[in-house]
Image (cartoon, rainbow, N blue to C red; front, side, top):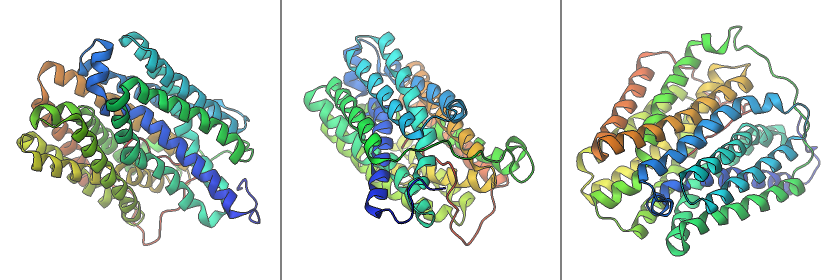
Length: 407
């Protein structure tokens, strides 16, 4: 049942959704900001970009462990208060990053941040449909997911600009203040949200990991997200070394990437509602093409920018299309399927960042790009040769719990 009665002013309902969307925006910006400030951050911590890039691995692993279990461990706690506390944890993680002088405290800070991120990710998209009338539930989830996409468009590029103008620590300090403000806003804008009714435990009468379309979807996501983050984590060093792009130009390129990512998010959501498998495979092809172009011709600035535009357009739709694939394949068991999806997605972010850092340290940028391209090809091939969820002419129903992890 929705937390707001139907007769309550719609403005209040959408204000609550907007606050929730801003929370996902700050969460994803906090997670991904090291991508935009990786070079000065590594210098400030006295380490290499490859090692600093491992900070994304730490956050992803912690979030992957937290997200699937958080709803089960929270009991009857008011979900509004829980998400507010998680935003305070996010703020604590960011302030520890500001104070870090070496990799050890950075690792601690990203662990704290990962816990807050995992809780927000597992609950925010589940809360969104409860804030509006039933017929507006899908839009509420889309807007909450839009905060994730907007983090790429505005958050990371803006953080990069702030980092260049005032220092990378100031950028993380700004996120600290934003998270604290949103924690307070949640308590004001949202109603009390008791624990929802328990979900069913089986999809179509069989366990999730024995449902072929669910397993295939998870495999495709693992390879595709790992491929993306293995390469994308080091996009700044790639642009600086291959094309001689300045720091300000890097921020502009990331902004362009994010704009097309936002377009991809909403376009893929519309397409995947009817054909989730075909949409995910089209996105995988786009990512494969973009990374291959960078591996072959990254020294040509025009080609590099065009490839990054395609990359943003394709990857921007992965999270929403993958989510629809999973909820369609696990009809009747969306909550558990989404918890599993969140864990696999965030673990793949961690794996990608770790793999990218390892390959770039041992072999360099070009072998890293070819490694990422190979992983994207495996994802595409797996999806082509294996069964996917059923297609439909109707829009995908809004799941009880849904998510959209990292640009």
